[in-house]
Length: 291
Figure 1 (cartoon, one colour):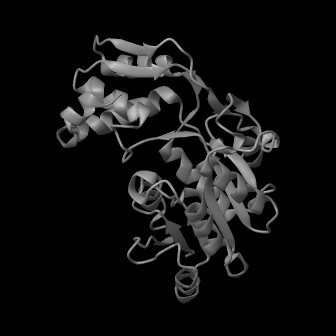
Figure 2: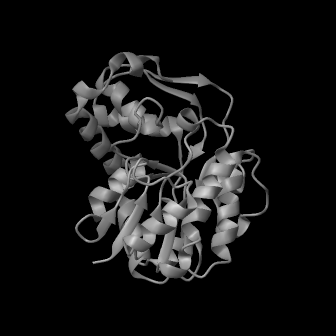
C-alpha cells in the first residue's frame, strides 16, 4: 500500500480526497501543528521518517487566516520545501489554478499551450504560474490545474453552487453578482483523476482538470432552482459581465480515455441533497447576508 503525504487535509479538497482514497492508500494528512510546511527541515524529516511514496499537495496560503502580504512567498516556499524531496518520492501531485492564465483577461476554453501568453498579476496567480514552470521542467512533479470545483465541505457562504443550494433550501432569493461563463468540476470526480495519476506515468506535467463544459452562472442558478422544485427569485445584481473562467480538458481526456466526469445536473442534485441532510448546521443569518 502506497504511503501518501496529503497536505491541506482539513481543507475542502483534502478532506474529500482523504475520504475517497483512505483504505486504498495509507494517507498521512498532518495538521499544521503536526507539520509546518514552511519549515524546510521539518518537511524533509517528515517525508523520510514516514517513508512517503507520493505527495499530494493541496495546502495553500489562506489570506483571511494568514494575511495577504506573504501569499506569494508562502505558497512558493511550501511547494519548494515539498518538491525539494522529489528525488526520494515517486511523484508529487499538486493543484494548480486557472489563475495561471491571468485572471485580468477572459479565460474561455483555454488550452495548456496558452500558459505564458500572459504573466499573472496577483501573488496567487504568479505563485501557481511559477510552480507550473518548475513542474514542466521536472521529472516527476505534476500540476493538476483546477478551475471551478464544488461539493460537500466547501464554505457555503462564499462558494457559488453551495451558496445557491443552501439559499434555496431556506427559501431565500438566489443571487448572482455578475454573469459569466464558468467551468465547474464535481469534487467526487477529482479522486478518480488523482488515483489515475498515482498509478500511471503521465505524458505531460500539467493538465487542465475540469469538466470541459461551460455554463453561465445564471444558467446554473436555474438548475439549482429546478432541483429545489420551488418558485424563488433569481437576482442578477449587475448587468455588467464578469470575466469568463473555463478550459478545455482535451489533454486530460486523451490521457485518461475512461475519464469520469459527472454531468452538472446530477452533481447539483447530490450537492442539494447533502445540504438538505445537514440543514440545521447551516447558519441562516450568515446565509442571508451572503451574496
